[in-house]
Length: 274
Image 1 (cartoon, rainbow, N blue to C red):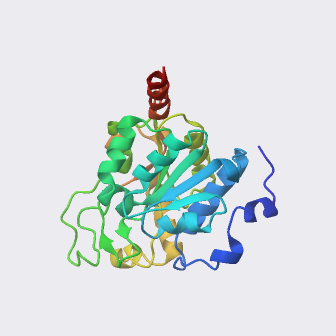
Image 2 (cartoon, helix red, strand yellow):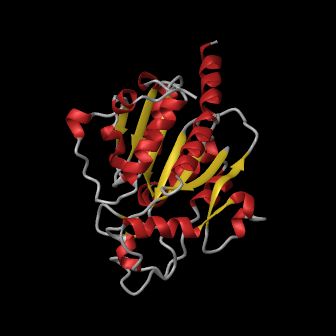
């Protein structure tokens, strides 16, 4: 393991330009951002060989705080942008970070087809069960009957399982963690970054400003306690896809690597030049 000094950690951020951050007090996104950067440093990923891409939303502001190549694109369009970056610069480590609304709603079709193509990137889905930036509306992952600003009497829609969709669509690696389990989260991100092909880490995160308040869970501390009490390790359950009312954390899917889209695309270009 590489020794991470405070200076190396801080040098990964645009401290003079972008801080203090705009995140609400108690938000989990700062925890995820810091954990992700520590994973980069531990794996020896240079800022010069990294591109972090996002769409629109609270968690999609993360690339703006990082001192590396970044791309803050349109709502839901992070994955098409990542596809272009990876095909143009296949030597780059490309990471997409975004929320449940950005990636699973307007960007849902892109998520499915990027997994189907097996693009060699890592996607971190910050799931706080709400549209945090625009006022607490319900999102594709808001559980049925839970309240939101657009569902004051309860959401009547069924929710998406981010990890199940990723696996079904063809992802090579799928994992889940939470903002309470910080060391565990770092390990999941590192495993995903080391996997060739499309890898997904879903991070269950607290949003005390909207989701926690609407459900009556409480402040950030109460929400972290809620995350802890609702989580169960994948090794403790017989079938991670059949567990209700719990967040199954750990590696949920890790299949044998197959050639990613990037390599197949490059082989076509080489044949075209012959």
